[in-house]
Length: 230
Image 1 (cartoon, rainbow, N blue to C red):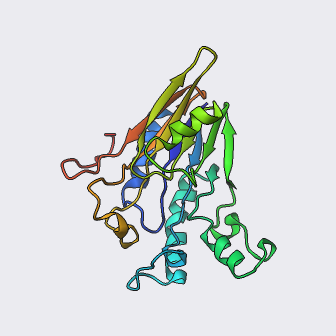
Image 2 (cartoon, helix red, strand yellow):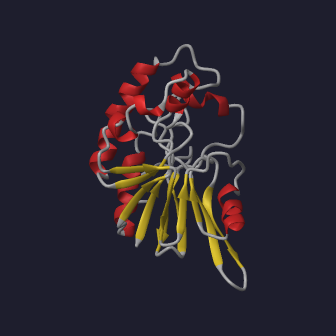
């Protein structure tokens, strides 16, 4: 099975051409199953960190995210999602207020994605798919793969996009970091502007659970994304 993995979207703060890139890349690879690495939405206005007072209200941000998500659901009506730390911000806010989960709508209901399977982790062809919450550093997916001795696919780490393998006399595993699809200039990512490194935009491909590839998206100052060119 050929699985195409979509990086963190952080709707509504997504790169305007990321969906086009994903479609082109998945068509080129003849992808058979689609997985979202998590952080489908950003929910900046519900953050526990500093919130931009000039930004959208929580309601307006969610409206914009829902409007943009329609195109993703239409493009990939049947997909799996690894729930990310940003995705669950509304649940965490509710818990902090003492509201049990039973009073809240499901992810499918909130984001009108009836064909998507939202879980914290999924396994296909022996490969573990997780968002990566709690991990840090560029080698996070690789470290997790070595610790678990199972191949791991992760998002979460915006500055990492690559596949790295580890082999012993008994097995071979890989850690695949799929990058992200964010709009680096959006105010939600202002925290990263002082740093010289920028997020790596792209996606991942896993074939039969044994081969892993990272596909970068052309988005630097010296390159431009063009249809049909990855």
